[in-house]
Amino acid sequence: MSADHTSSVISARVRHVEALLESRGLLDEGEIDGRIDEFLAGGTPANGARITARAWVDPGFRERLLADANAAIREVGLSMAGGLQEQRLKVVANTADEHNVVVCTLCSCYPIALLGPSPGWYKSEAYRSRVVRDPRGVLREFGLELPERTRISVWDASAESRYMVVPRRPEGTEGLSEEQLAALVTRKGLIGTAAV
Amino acid sequence: MGDLAPGMRVRTRTADPDGHTRLPRYARGAVGVLVEQAGVHPLADDRARGRAGTPQPVWHVRFAAADLFGSGDHTVTVELWADYLTPIEEPA
Image (cartoon, rainbow over all chains, first blue to last red; front, side):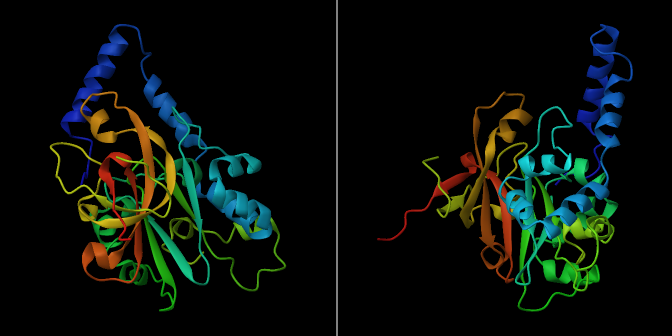
């Protein structure tokens, strides 16, 4: 497992290469920081919440979202193509029978475009190593007690896809607008460590 | 590598390679079921060694927790390059 990257040999090499590229005029000073800022600018859990609310009110959208998330999120004006190449998005939906939770056991892969920067606990070794072994126990520590009969599916973002969970729509929200529904959705809900 | 298809049972590689791999330790030498293909990408192990790597299918592979850890009633779905996977011959 990798932990903190900032002082690693590879970081030093990257900084060295960056300096060389700048000295040879191939890269403007600060260009990489600019690109990273641009990439992060639109990223916020409000995007994931908007997708979720649309999936709650529109069964057709929900179906398209689960089948091909990259195409479906374009319907709400979002995209996974903000980086150097489009990242594959896999969206999974919670039901009464099944609860999904996402982790990256190898590092900290996360759908930044839809959820913003990841929370500290998502990158912690404790979460990454424990949630695959004992998800029910870890979710209990997050305050989420699932019924015994609810199956738990853990998704390890070990390769190129990014994952998002569509939480279950809370009961008693029939009268709410799509916007009001989106306001109910939390970042933890979109990772799977909270009910909504 | 063979032809892989959804529903197929596969065993993951057991070898612990030198350097980077995207086959998590807990999922080594384990038997799982292919769920769906997750695109085509150059093998991360090659890229980490500075090689371009030939693009190959990547799969969502579902494991029963009991098969990975000896206990647990949940499943863990890991995303694995075809290079890590060998189809299991089903008994007739």
